[in-house]
Length: 155
Image (tube, rainbow, N blue to C red; front, side):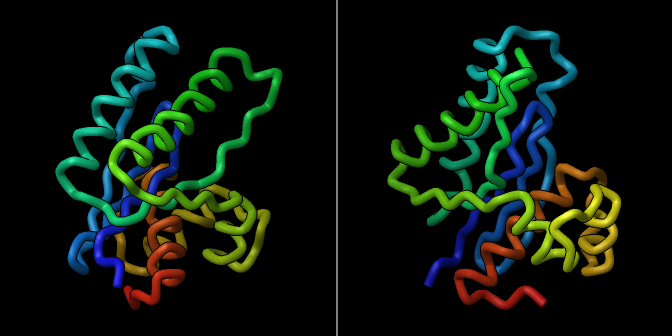
């Protein structure tokens, strides 16, 4: 049975949720404050995530599927790179990655595939998780979805 799960809402402000031996934790990795070029952001993201994987030793990674609109320029390039880095590190550490569509995550969490960020945050807070932003809310929603898929009861 899987005991350690890493759940990600990947972006320049990445939401991270962790289940390790039935203990849940969450945080944000904020790369947005640094005015760096995509390559620099990717390098920092790689180092931070590689270190996190080394420390928590997840058996599986679940992440919210990326949306890469062609007109988003630097933001799309960064986001695409972050998703590639997750896949690279998962391969390096021998970990399976499962992507969850944004609409699926919203529907499972709130009952509506069109839920707002505020709706997602409210549901996660109502479950007792004191998240501080929508990135942590999304990561927690990914973790709760992952736990359910893996047969782990967190309710």
